[in-house]
Length: 237
Length: 292
Image (cartoon, rainbow over all chains, first blue to last red; front, top):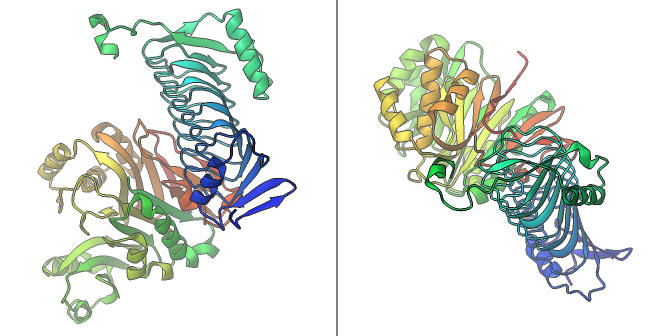
């Protein structure tokens, strides 16, 4: 193992000031479900891209600082905590596990993710949850424009406000917003909050450590008018 | 791609380090723009004087100019800074323009502007950026998309006295806007899209708009995707297109305001661990001014 890794109190501490990103990701990607190296801390990330991508073992990874693009992308089972901000595409295409951003996230957080839980303590900027395919995302702050664009399934919870064109061309993802929505995208509409919706929302709020009540949120979903092409809707596509 | 770095100092104690800090930021942004690089730096002024930054063709002895122009000339690789009394600005401009070996890159009381082809680190070393001091600086690393890799196509572009512009993105209506501006008497040296944005701002300012007004009207008239950072004698401004295609992150402390295309470019700044970090919102004009 690289000399950049030091084991302290059963935690594998990897210092990116002393080793390369490739060494880090190589070490993490070689772990399997039977590993006993289950705790990892990454020091000095300094905004590096592609931190802890493609991890398939159920390990705990703490990134101590700000992360660059695509942090924890394709995550399949790991629990990743970022003690800082995350740049574009955090947890993109996550399959399972969880990613917790303690700061803000930039654009396209949770893009195309199939599963798992993404928690953002701060704000997320544009296109949060774009084309999400089953992931649960809880944003404790606000999200930027075009969030949940073409979102297919999963749940997006926004405790703050949503920017323009929320849920444009939405499929079957559920959107819950506590604050104001600047505007709804094409084919996105307010839905009645069913008991099932309320249960899903309540469980996600608890998982994310939020104190809000589900009753404070409005549920948005697809009007399902753009599923099949109709010439009257040509201007909406 | 392309990378942008901007650093605006609030704490005068950091001014001697401005060039060193900017050189590090540009070096980190090499991955976003390895073709060419450039920077505008706002240093000390000589009261009552203006500075021309000129690019000099190989073989021309720029140090022969002082005798002919009665000016103070400082050489920086293939650029030179020519300082003359402000009252003689028009006369000296005409004399400089009469030399086919010289291209005027910028003019201003404080701004000096240097750019060239090559890796950002090499460009910084050639011009001696690390040894430069000042209140603020704007730099750019270019990955060419809309026009050739040449010194003329490198950024920043000067938009007027003590004003410059850098750009990450590409404009789709630049040919149309260029034609309109040429009819208004704005001159262009290249087919570059960013030069059109610079010319557009120059035109708006000439017509009486303030810089923030000119940037606001750019939202309507320039089509494409862009993050612009503009420098002025006393501050700098930031504008992103409404779709926010191009990345931007800002950091503010008691000592400075900094702009980077990515956080990586800011990671080496002093006190960054406790800075207020934020992403500038789309279609919103941001401006920081130095107290007079």
